[in-house]
Amino acid sequence: MRQFYRSLLNLLFPLRGCPLCGARDQADLCASCRDFLARAAREPYCPVCGRYFDSPGAGLCRECSGRTWPFVFSRAATPYEGVIREAIHRFKFGGRRDRAGFLGELMVAALNREPAYREATLVVPVPLSRERLRERGFNQAELLAGVVAERAGSRLIRALQKTGDTPPQARLDKAARLGNVAGSFCVADASQIEGETVLLVDDIFTTGSTLSAAAEALLERGAGRVLGLTLAAGRTRSF
Image 1 (cartoon, rainbow, N blue to C red):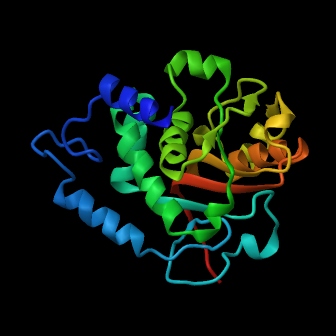
Image 2 (spheres, one colour; image 1 turned 45 degrees about the vertical axis):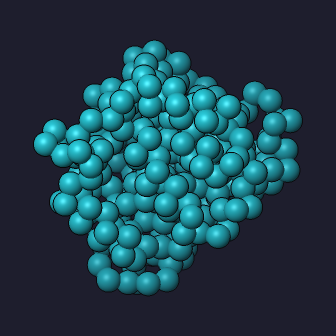
């Protein structure tokens, strides 16, 4: 089933040009994007939320030192900036589903760098509302989660549902984002996740409000633990 998923994705959405920036004169990853990814792999990040430090630092970021998240930890493949930010925008809002395979592989690389992910038994994507899904035509988190699940040899479960259509998080400030998604996810069939260690997948981690709300819904319905994984993450302050 996992091989069928990948084959179908490649057949329907063949990749052309640089898989990150889309440069048409490239048959593979261009030198500029290769350099971006190499620098991203060396960036220091908070070991709990996975956000990258905005200045040299180590240990917990300021926010994580004073709060507890519903997920155990989260990691991201790259900082949410530059070419990856543009690639995500083309992917989500430009309908570039042909980029899902490559972007998902970036997440797999982040997954493989963290041994604790081996404890995850299920992969669950953060869902879109019915209205947003109808408008966009696909859920970017689900496409990414499909690649991650295939490579990790795990089951992809659409355990979460969005209970209503909320304003896009990108248009809101930090305080508004927290209230915007609080209580906006539910689990239809708790038997799928009871006692499981869930790998929760989304495209971007900025304030962490979306991942937190989704993780809380999973834990409330019996999930054992939740680990987060995103394609990109914002920056945070170190001490």
